[in-house]
Image (tube, rainbow, N blue to C red; front, side, top):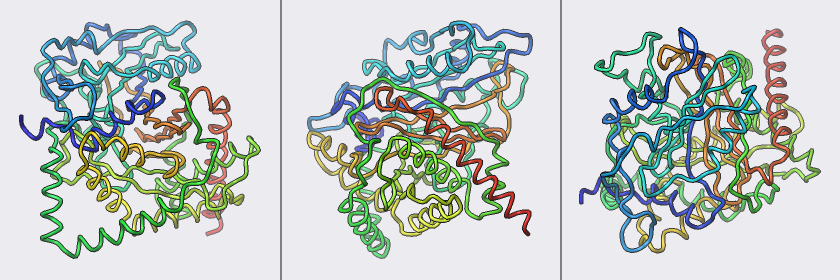
Length: 474
């Protein structure tokens, strides 16, 4: 079979994490909320299915399933055509109970993301959800992480989106994905261009080895970075925290929304990037959570795993996972919001400059050389609570408003997975002048999720106040 039909070791790792622990749900997704159609109401489920199926050939992997539903043995699973593929099994319809307000909506998507995908079928689902307050409706997607990286499940929904309010004719070519998903360079993970093929694990390892032989200086730099990563982020374990306990498989979702201009005002006044503001806001929220729990604040800070996009320009249209990690300490023990921001900014900058993402990628490639039957132990080690306390990612989306069936998209809520013994993960997605934090948590161990959301709100307000005072003093 072609090498590019075989999962890479990193792709397979997300399957292995589920197989190792029932509490690990390794799908990613996005919940997109729309205004009513131009004439009122919501689209019919038949329209959504027909509209999507006409364009599904742009994402051929979405008609394929795993050749074997589990990992192990002597080879990674491969993708194969699902001869019994039915669009109705992947695109379904649901209606919120009255009054369809935010509480009902978040409860519904929390339940939707609490169930695993069926490995006997292509590993994705979309729900058309109507009954939201004020005539709004939503498209809610779920895709297994072995299929795409970042919040890449937006890739399937992208086929339903337009850059103009007038709906496309069925025969019209689909708008380029780059029109809908921001692809400018940066250091945090983002939704990839989801059209193309994957590279086989063996071929990737061979190319990596050849690159090291032809570029010895690069090999030396990566070796130094690997040593630094092992010493700093493996031998020195992440601190113990109530965020890292045994969890269940039922999820809870909350959101925080802020105007993107307010975030830009902070970075312009205080220096740094949007990503620094995101990390600092979450740091403030986590500080509030630990204080409310009466927990000692770790002096070195909590450790965040921050996904990094390592996709090359020529790989922008490939499926599969091309992502590495940075491990950034979050100074939750620091009470002063300005000093907290400066620490976050300095630490993030130091991690980026250190080549740590390349080191993590090199370590991942090395684990790919292990036989599949042994790889699951390595996969679990690379997502263990010893290595990090929480996942935080930022996904820059389209700065322009987009539409589905003529209705404008109002809000995009990103979802990232929870590995075992990690009670919460946080993604932030920007879109059309707004920034939405999606908090994805274990229901049993995070009954106080509202404390974290309120803490992020407060932290953002503190940063905005600091930015205003700094700008006024100039």
